[in-house]
Image 1 (cartoon, rainbow, N blue to C red):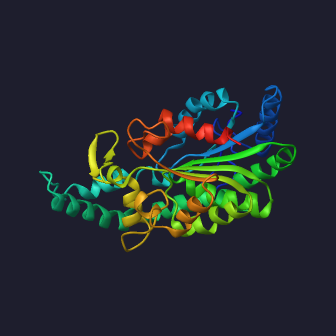
Image 2: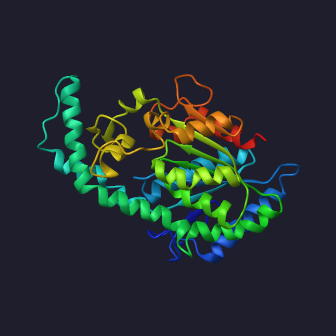
Image 3: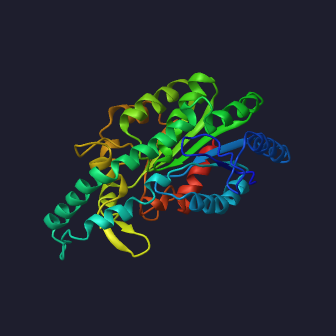
Amino acid sequence: MSTHLIHLTEDGRLKDDGSAQSTSQTDLVQVVADMAAMQSSWAGQKPRVVLYAHGGNVAAADAVTYANWATDLWMNERIYPLFFIWRSDPLSSFVELLMDRLRNVVRPKGLEDVLIEAFDKAVEAIARKLVTPLWAKMKANALGASTDSVGGAKRLAALLTPLVGAGLELNLVGHSAGGIFHAPLVKHLVSDLMLPVHSATLWAPGTRMDLFKSTYVPAFANGLQKFSLYTLPDATERTDALVEPSRKILVYHKSILYLVSNALEGARAGTGILGMARFASANSVLTGMLATAPDRARWIQSASGSALSAATSHTGFTVDTATLTSTMDGIKAA
């Protein structure tokens, strides 16, 4: 059992099956005890925990590999990481589904915008029919961890409550669909348990604007002390091509968040997604937070050479040194 991993089932409950990738309630208690013991050895350091939720289209094995890689980065900063390994697997085969249906779609041979846009519209139409149910299932998995009465994230929150009362600082970091995962969790922590949450950091979140408004926004008004949003510039998002990983075949000319907005979230294109710059800049609630509380809310758009984020792709935020450093620095700041 890893002291940094919390394995969940498809419905968001603890994955208590006795396998190598298993977390029972007893295991969860031990995870929290190990965290407290380690933090007590960090003399003079404020006890901090970061709860990390990975994105969608990520197989559990890949999520574990990333967690194992990232653990030392967080620990070196005296921030104890706990990684939710939640089942975004229902979406992990969506590229293959698209590939199967795209074989007869004519691909643009040149760089003409009209041809590229027509191709992407065809992809969106196929995804709307085939992939939307997988996206909906994945979102249900994410939400269930905190909305189910015995959800894994809710159980962890109960165990952390006395430690927060004793001074433990709570921080949330989510990438892509991880922003959906954390939405009901931050609401539960602040509204139900009335716990202070030091920070919530979202890297290119796939969170709908209405979910953002019903969870993160009221939490920010009541107990969430700091909120950070990281996005790609829209120009980068429009060219962050989605590629089939094993055969390196182009599937879609834009980022996965464009596919979410234009296909997976409904029949009509253009659903507002928090992690897309084009929607973030037009959202009065978000811009209001940024304007009225600049010391507590920030929006970082990645740029080449930036000390805050130099990510050049949707997945790049998770390994970008500048993004990780500025996220950690933001957590450690008062």
